[in-house]
Length: 271
Image (cartoon, rainbow, N blue to C red):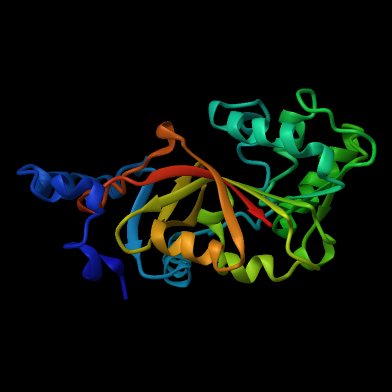
């Protein structure tokens, strides 16, 4: 069932004023009209689950990143250090001496390794392993080999990544097709450190929308923040730090009554 019928009267409480906006009906209508234009809004639709959103995307054409012709989309734009990377860089700088194996989940073609390696003291002993979907892993391996990045490794299955000291997920959680606890459970052992960035959150019920990015559409999950925190803390992790990425807040233009999301980052530690 679409969240459209579930949540029209459940905006994020941080944006409750949105539903009182006298122009809201016109904003909703304009957002849905934009779907018919050659360039649709970045986010559209509101669904109850990842599976429902993926099925909707598949009906429109190619869905998700696991396709060779879209695997490299955005690569050049993701390789520089961006403003929201600096909290992660700070904590990596503090922790790198404790880390022998770092798993970069959803790390695309090693973009964070490429961005950070000149700014961090990454010694020869540290292994940086990227986990991503098969098409992206194939493209990442080809590019790493061409660029001589022998220390950048890739796996298609998290079970093959080993037992990391640090789990990095930068822009991972909104694209996950499984629960975060289930994903971590695929590792040999729980990592001591979790660095999670660009986590899309709201105070209302979890919503899955569709992100339109160049020629692909993919489900994009905006989590209920309290539920997310309970899930991670239920695994035994303690929150050390939290930050906000204001420029990555989004509104689903077809459902503006749901309010805007918050993009946040976290450092959790397993004591």
